[in-house]
Length: 398
Length: 226
Image 1 (cartoon, rainbow over the protein chains, first blue to last red):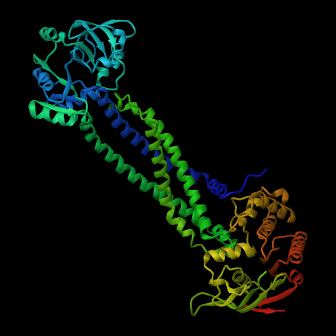
Image 2: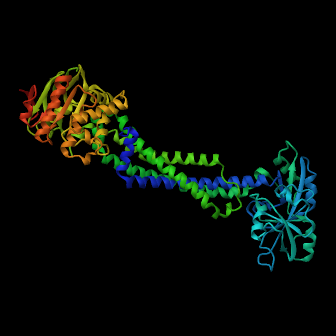
Image 3: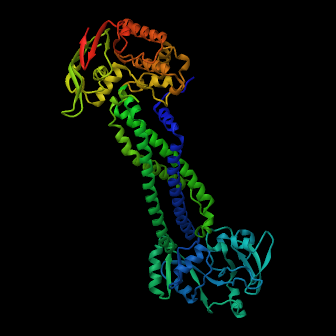
């Protein structure tokens, strides 16, 4: 049984006449769309990772020393090893602010890279177990007790770094041996690379002289606000009240990183626009050649009854097929690239939040629409020129 | 078939001063069942006259009336519809679409009809026409797989696909051997006699022309009915 002859099969047959030329255009559109999908996936993933990480910190507000907001975000979102301190009295002053429901604090100590026998350079976070609501949710119930002096729990990636397995091991921090008694679940935040000890250890570490932080200080205060309270308003009150502290509402955490990332997005955009112009020019050149090459065929079609619209539809179908096929391949390649290569980017190393199905579908649909659209726009002028072809050309012979 | 009338049509090419009149004041009326052969030397204007009758080329002066209406007052789409529904062309030169098989080349004009018929019916008709020109077994061959004569026969079959009332054939048997030429002429006569399809045949071959019911001759653009 012969296959049914349709306009679609006619268009496909035309495209297969010049497979190399068709493949080049498909590849060009595919490359353009894969770059777009990769860039969008990258940007979206960074944004969503920062958002997710800030959400997972469990606090509505962060209070850090004035001027240390960027450093705090680096530690909490990007696993950086940085220290900053403010007076411990800030904890109680934050607690006293109207609208604040709960507070807890952490003090960050940096281990030294290459120090003899110590674990690799990392942040040691001393936290108050009584008030804590940041670390505890990520500690599986198996610990079953409070941390004692000389005991530590580690983030999921630190556990890997210092080879903590299912058995308890000892690690040396600031020259002192700590028994690692637990591993946090993966949080996708800076907590993953930190080591946590009870704040009762801090005084002893400072006395030993190997850890350095001002006495009676904390690095960050985490706060939860009362139900229905606006964290941004409370943050404003804290900044007005406590001059030596910056307060950051959760929705604003990561804004420093995102603002810096805006430049990267603009580079992506400019690159995409330039590549789009190039792809459109290629589509124009290819379909100009096609229209010129098929002038007798178009004349013949017109002579045997085709209207202008029949010819235009046939060409448009070919253009859409090329654009859609290239875009589809580009979406697949870009998505694959974003999954495979993305781990090579430092900014995403801490990101546990992958893109959701909805995000990927939206990016894919955008890639398909833009890739196909750019191909159509490029080919529009040659397609329009086919309308001018007179049926008489068919009588003129070869 | 509504009457097709060429009224003193003239076609000139080129700019003023250097213009050449390919057809000069030709008049011809074609009714249902007519079989007209037009002979003449190369360059005498036969093909140009045919193109004006077929709605392919606007006359410089004069009118071509179809059912009393001037064809060239139609807009582009209406003229396409006229060609699609009423006229079957057999062109002098190779005129198959190279990307399509013989069967698909036949199906092509049917796709341009304002109300296309069902696929199965069209398929059957295409194969029936290929059978009539002796190429049923070559239905799925591409033009490059067919000889020049076979391509010509496919083009002839295609001209009948939309069951037109008028066939305009320009040297339709030029590439054919004597036996096939006789088969094609037999097919033309059968269509003419059984269905009343009108034919206008342009040919160098006076023997072929003698088989037509009416004969005309063109000389330097002037048409003279014999």
